[in-house]
Amino acid sequence: MHASRVTVPPTTSVVPFLPILVVSVIHLGAILLGQNDIVAWTKPLLMPALAIGLIWAAPQRRSPAVLLGALALFLSWVGDVTLRWFVVGLIFFLLAHIVYLVLFVSRLTARRMPWWAVAYLVWLGVLLVMLAPHTGSLLIPVIAYGVVLSAMAAFASRCNRWVAVGGALFVVSDSILAIDRFLPNAGIPLADAVIMVTYLAAQTLIVWGLLQHERARVALGPSSA
Image (cartoon, rainbow, N blue to C red; front, top):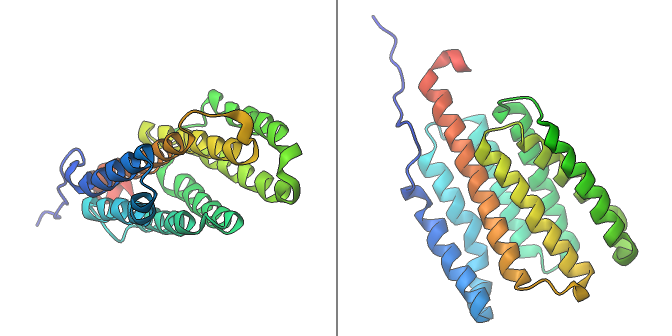
């Protein structure tokens, strides 16, 4: 008898990502139009909509990579709804980045660290020099968050291109958020919209890259475990 083999499509369908696309368009449109009530009720829907895409498209829904990805999205969702209390939201996003870091190191690594990943260390140093005089009692939490974020992005660069770009966009999003909060006179145009566009792109690309990795792994069969 021949061993059965799981057959999966070569690429992930975009259909499972329609929920996050629809909610994102409504949310971003509301930001641009200044519709704060719509912004408030759509923000808690963003990460659940993306989690639907992850679980819907996953070839093996209980695989460690999918479970870690779902946990990171859950922690990000808690961060989204608690960011009005800045330190609380920061803690949950810190935990989300730690989970992503574990995911990248243990499940999604595909190559050696590229030389350009050192840019994340340079970015961290420059950003902390800019922000440190303005963070007050939040200096230590901001440093801790920056270290974990830069490590997450650096190890994302060892994964496929979707995850690598997602990690980079997370750095962009959180950098703009930090500058906008601690240096309000910086005057970043459309800061709220740019923060959310890069944040949503980062999360979606990481999930997309995770799914590409998982589908390739399952298609190869037991030998890829």
